[in-house]
Image (tube, rainbow, N blue to C red):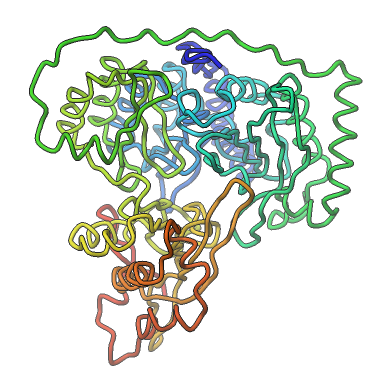
Length: 573
């Protein structure tokens, strides 16, 4: 593998089509004239990436970001649209997309048009479709990868986007491609369709194809459908999985319509047979040949003398946030993004950084952060200074302080609690308690406002799921606490429910579990593994009293959900 074999190519990330916006405007007009039912309009706009919010007259727009890769020009487009229509905030999701919240419904078409002008699409970012293809943000620069999966992400996205199979599925199908970093960096085992890069005995590149993973009320680790798919057969193999789901997914009961339910019903062996049948049918149709795309190498930034003395905190930032690429002389930097929120100003600052010091692209991550790549090592002081100026020089990406959360009841109609408020509360509490951070820095925390696990709480060392209990006839927001979840190179491990903690007591519960990890950790053991092997008695002892709440103990604040800084939401009785 050469150092610059499959690096960024500016034009590949332009996925917009003008007709998508035209169709949206036409359908909106039909709905307003009564020619389209409310149900048909809802299905249509979701396939175009638009959801209603909890607030009347406000919408959420999801921007598809395949592989988490977005150009500097597109970052500026998102910044402009956020500033004009979404309160100046863009949110990074756990599927590497950008979401724009609180968009006035009457401005959605203008926002979609502006995004399309910047080459960005919302098509099939939501709805019963092949969703955003996620991948490792280090694809192409990691020393651990068998080969760079980036061109295969591009090929798969273009094959399905607006294709005949992509938007008529029983429910959504979430795909991922990965295989570097020595583990399941792309979370393939919790996706409906996963591809893990590998090589055959003769060194030929290919993928291990897995399917049927998922979180939510029915959690499943994906099964292996095909041990080795040559890269030339990527599109045929992935289309075969989509076709199996199209033909055999449950179209009568949405609650049981995901691919994992079809595998449960039909059995793994039968699904493998159906997959092989679809492969044969595709071959009879002429196949789906994949020809590798020759992508241009990045233009290395010229070697320049440092323009300024490194800022205060530079050495600590390098130690915590920077790592070398496999390409000599270049580095990557992880940027922690609290709550996954970036202001329009921060988006523009990031665009300037990747234009000036990197390769013109940014990568989002599946834990709601961003990664800068192709940074010449001598430019790191300049990069750090620019991040400091943008209030983005936070360290701790991927650690206990990097709390992941879905939008929760701030905007989502399904959420029970303001998970963002819980994330903000925990982040603030951890900032004041260095002892907890030191006890278990790798104690990952993920929060969802409902059982659907958009915050991926089922695969965190500590997973928190929003809920409610009644006390004296009144509702108390609480979180179902799961421990020991993880995604690994061999499968997903789901955390087990061990307690129900009133929302106001979450910081105390996290501190107690961090101390338990510090006491019980074996050499080189991950925090998630420590919690996974604890018995119920040990966990009950660590959390003693924190789940109990009586009328005598409760204050008025216990009945009010945690404030996320945007919308105070009182849980309904």
